[in-house]
Length: 406
Ligand code: T4K
Image (cartoon, rainbow, N blue to C red; front, side, top):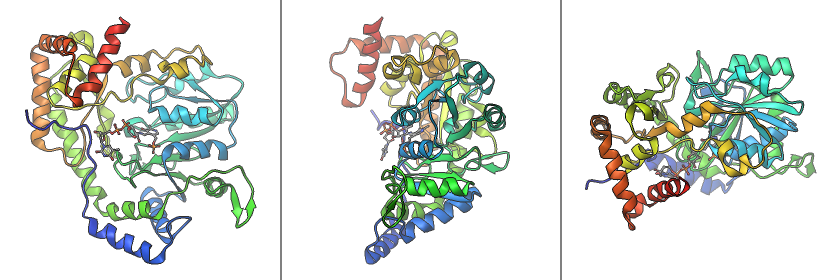
């Protein structure tokens, strides 16, 4: 069998530029704590997003945590259950309760209309997530936050270089947190940034990420260490010149997918992904198991078996993860998030993905469309095997678990 199409592979860059920057760091011997490379990257990110302040951090999860602290939030925070678990963990790690409010069918982001009914007296903030780079209903969330005197802020992990109606993500709410993990469009191996237009908030964030120091030996806050090192910053800087070329290629990947997947009534493409301003980083599709005659998990396993690695982002819905469902802080139901997370698949989407690979993915979907029974037969046979290749073990375990639960 030919090489599998992996779910993701970061773009390879010419390392010359990076090594030059690394040599400069090595000569300076300033490796962290607001060195010149961090300052240079900060300037570029501010300019790119048209925002006044940028605080670089070691990852988005800790960025969310220090932002929650800097905003002085208490009690509960309203958020979405349809996101990566880091969003909810950041809230809980700060000792606050996430209150999960259902999502909109079209944008997959938190549904502002449902927030008033979920309001509790101890809610101090709203954490929206621009999932897959699709911006939340920022205007409505802003109005709600004013009505209830809440602070609204965003998990913008997927949004590097994304715009909504001409305004860059990074400018909404109190602040927005970006991820620079190696699986993101722009990355610094691990890393992230908090973008804001609020000077005093920015100053506090800078202190919180550096042990709470406000001066050389003055500790003004309970802080942590969330700094981004110079080498990571140098890598990020060295890749910025390639950004627009990468986005152009990802746009083409989206257009190709749209062509090969357009005829299937059981596949819903998330249309907002093609709005101007998208960074085209993810390609999620929602499967209708009733029309197709087999489940998302069966399609997921079959695709892996045929050498097409996809991801069930984001599954399960966070309020169905035992740690969160056992907290039982809320009885709000989230049927849209539950259904979407059971039926969504993210397809491979990256710079190196070739047109031929997209054709192959398209023809595998075409086989599924012609005869969904082959999927069921394949899955039955797969589950009856006691030994499977290492690549398929994670899929095998997941399906076995579901089978045992039935
Ligand atoms: N909020 C949201 C909405 C998020 O999606 C995330 C992170 C966060 C907050 C938190 O951001 P950070 O604290 O991480 O800055 C990955 C990432 O670890 C995670 O950053 C990301 N979201 C999440 C959606 O995906 P995994 O465990 O699914 O990734 P993994 O290791 O299985 O890799 C996926 C694919 O990428 C595979 O095909 C292998 C490939 N890969 C991965 C890495 C790490 C590479 O080719 N090279 C690499 O270096 O979580």
